[in-house]
Image (cartoon, rainbow over all chains, first blue to last red):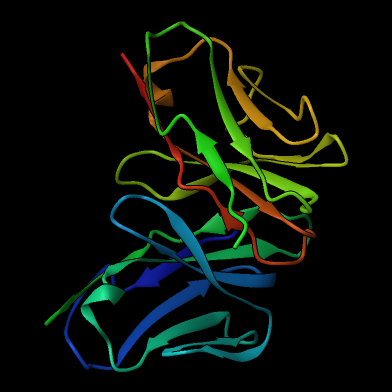
Length: 109
Length: 113
């Protein structure tokens, strides 16, 4: 069973700061997802990646398959980025996702 | 942009009653999923559904649970005899293939009394 750990659990930043959220997993995967969960509970898919790096606006996601580690970076953070960020991995067999516990981010103006 | 829609947004049910949670996936998607999140805990996979059958299910998805795609547009999760511990947020998701990002609904908050 894949163990997915995220750090930090909670993060408070000032507007404009560069933010990094980390995710590590224990067993080889076929893909890793970064998700954003808003205070109301809704979940939005930010990235799916299986190698290298992806960028969308101010968000950058990287993955190191050998080290079983991924990072989500937010540049020029803004209060609207405040949310819970969740890492989820898809194992090599099947489509089942295993989720990390989430990182609660608060960006203060 | 197309969305996954879930109804109701909040369901309150007496313990022991049957409950059906409804989802309308994005129309050209072929893979459908149910997840749950107990308050304060991680999101957990329940089941995936493809080609009118369950393709994968977790240990949580026992005989009390069932899924159905009754009419080609809706995707439902039924809990036969609810327990207090079934109280959670239930998310539906869909994807065009099993290898592409999933689109999530806003969830149904299920409260068992």
